[in-house]
Length: 194
Image 1 (cartoon, one colour):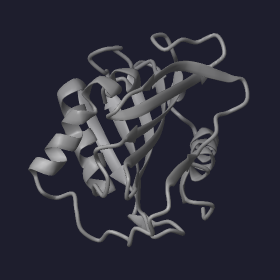
Image 2 (spheres, helix red, strand yellow):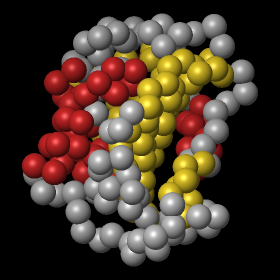
Image 3 (cartoon, helix red, strand yellow):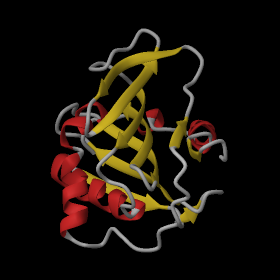
């Protein structure tokens, strides 16, 4: 996988691939006309690493205190792609996996069964593993939660870097549970219905 910080510079590529492959639509919930509001949180002791807001979308990343946007072992990133409403979230993950093949010595994507939230929005979650990423030289494991909204595509991801020579540094079961719990709180609300 490409380092999550750099992801914001190439995020249009997976979306363009998705649209070009025409595998991204269908199965949409009815838009009730209410504004979509994102709900998310970050772990105690983490701080904002970087933020970007523009007409195409928003990105905000958090890292544990003492780490930076460029030098991190764990990073939590939330992205909103304003021009990508109703994109298939599983297709987005497949495109991220295709990009990982270009930037990792090897990669693996495990996608959970697609689901729908209380508002009928399509959701896909998945783990992406990247061995020896071309930018960092480290292994990266990332958990994604992708929500296909009526007004945008919303992506939450948490990643951990580890030394390729130390498999024990990879996320353990307790960390994975914490990640899943954190991203379970990442939601898109319509008006005041979450």
